[in-house]
Image 1 (cartoon, rainbow, N blue to C red):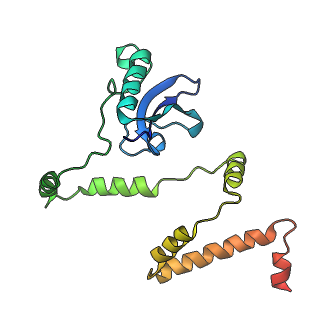
Image 2 (tube, rainbow, N blue to C red):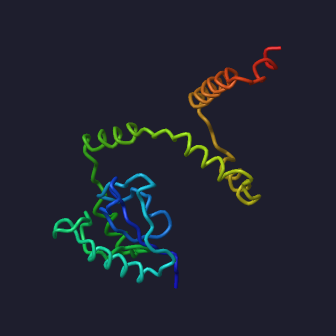
Image 3 (cartoon, helix red, strand yellow):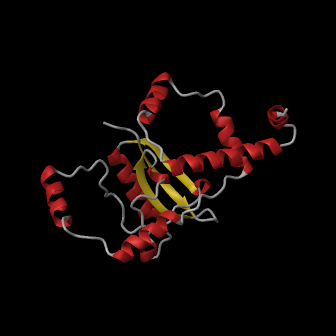
Length: 195
């Protein structure tokens, strides 16, 4: 029996929880399939760890019952009382075939496609703060990929074809990067290259 489940809470800025969930892996931090907004990482609180799935469901139900759903006068935005979910659920071959048949011949509307493109291309990454960059730097010090990991990375890149346009963009990006590096105070790279 797996003991890698946990329960978590999403907190408001004032520290009050607004959502209770159960998950394993990176579930608490992932947007996939959610109708609720995910807060910043410092506002995600892991409540209990090393639970079986059943224990995690029970704890989720308990926490939701204690804090109450907003719809019933409580403080949580949960849509249900908890205790349900489809983790590890796999569709049978017959179900997958039915799903495939219902989709065949259907086309997404032009509006849906345009909105999807806008959503994907409009995403902007929030820049890391100096403190966050420092934390990442400290956590990565002394770590290097294992030989197996290096071999897998190498294998995944073999036979990869880069278009001339992509190659040009990579070249321009590297030139901009090296120009910035040369401008850094105390840098000797520029003087060596220009000597």
